[in-house]
Amino acid sequence: MIARVEPSVVTVRLPSGVGSGVVYRDDLVVTNQHVVGDMRGVVLQFADGSTTSGEVLAADRISDLAVIRSARGGLPPLPVRTELPRQGEVAIAIGSPLGLENTVTAGIVSAVGRELPGRAPGSPLGLIQTDAPISPGNSGGALVDAQGRLIGVNEIYIPPGAGAVSLGFAIPSATVVNVADQLIGRGAVAHPWMGVSLTALTPEIRDRLGVDALAGAVVLEVVPDGPAERAGLRSGDVITGFADVPIASVEDVVTRLADTLPGQTVPLTVSRGGAPTTLSLVVGERPS
Image 1 (cartoon, helix red, strand yellow):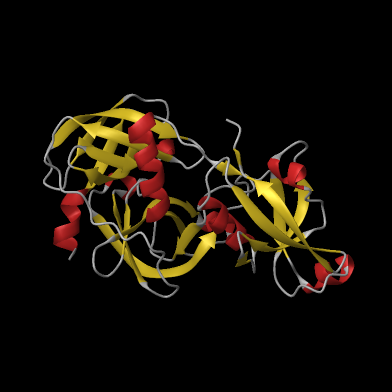
Image 2 (cartoon, rainbow, N blue to C red):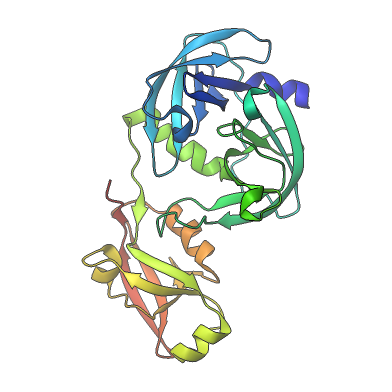
């Protein structure tokens, strides 16, 4: 399986460093935006050691994805699995950590729907967490399942200096496809946005708010004149339903929001002071 996947994973070389990429179409490669930065031209190195030039067509900082056009065509796209993997599934990372081309590391899917500290609230990314070792240079490379299908594009790891052990994160393939197609089609990405800051509903917060909901996402802050405020959401509300789908966590809101489009109207169910309330949210587009 690895021998079949390797030709679809490339090394992205820049004067400032090295990253990885995944063949998306026969002349297009997807990588992280933070790999290419503001560069317009890069060098792509393939599994057989050959190289070619690449032009960065478009990039998106929020999703941390970019699309590169390869001067060489006929590249083998990696099969994509768009449904989220299950916790405990095999996860194999392929890339160029520290410039070591076609390095393969293996682990499992530790969790899905993760948000990283510091990422903007309501971001459309619910990341895949994996314990497959990821290092500098793996960014933009492939996270594949046991059948060699792309389940994510590796984005970031938490270094051991922060007290972490094998904490890596990848952008789910469904997000990769959505963003890449928008970048290819129109050169930019429309990001759905609520304009809220959310936190988990813990027993302590439940008691303090006096809500009956056993699960949901607590609204901490509401952006003035944002979509959530215009819908009537308030600080202290607990979101328990989004587009008629039950919400058990912050990650659920992130996942459901990612399935919407700016301008779309969705019903929200919230618990406010112990009483259920239904609101109508017009999803906005995240300010640049």
